[in-house]
Image 1 (tube, rainbow, N blue to C red):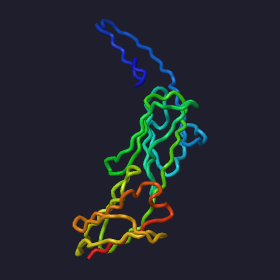
Image 2 (cartoon, rainbow, N blue to C red):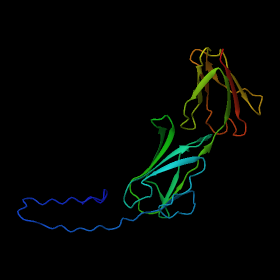
Image 3 (cartoon, rainbow, N blue to C red):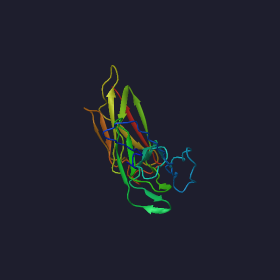
Image 4 (cartoon, helix red, strand yellow):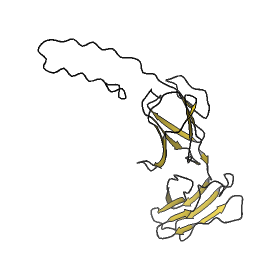
Length: 216
């Protein structure tokens, strides 16, 4: 009997006559989870997402002695936090794994894995607010690289539109400050890099950046 997968395999060798097998299962306890001290919803209801994040839980609700995984994605202008805290059954939990990476679609994700659940879960996690920016372009398109952690730079790659060329320079301004932020721009590749854009305090959330690029 495999209690983790909730499966039982019965092997009867050398059968020479009819046999009857009777089996009955027991209900497996299903637990609840919530974020940041919110009330625990009754399954199958799901908890409200934490500030600045969306999430997907597998399975939908924690099951006793099973692995429980929660995948987080940041909302616009938010960053995945570097750490989180968990209480299980009202007690601090230290045996869990939380990692940040980029998924196959190029989106930043944070994955929480708890190997074996034995009680209700309270997960303390919030997205971190980062700077915002306004991108003003003409005769160009652009792609923005995902920002995974606090050391991430803002990297924008400009692409030529039909009948135009990449600009020789771009302008980066702060909305509420005369100070020009440090940045690099490669007019050959069209890559603009603003270091430490995601680092809290470098660009206050209220002081957004204005980026202007015009194809020629």
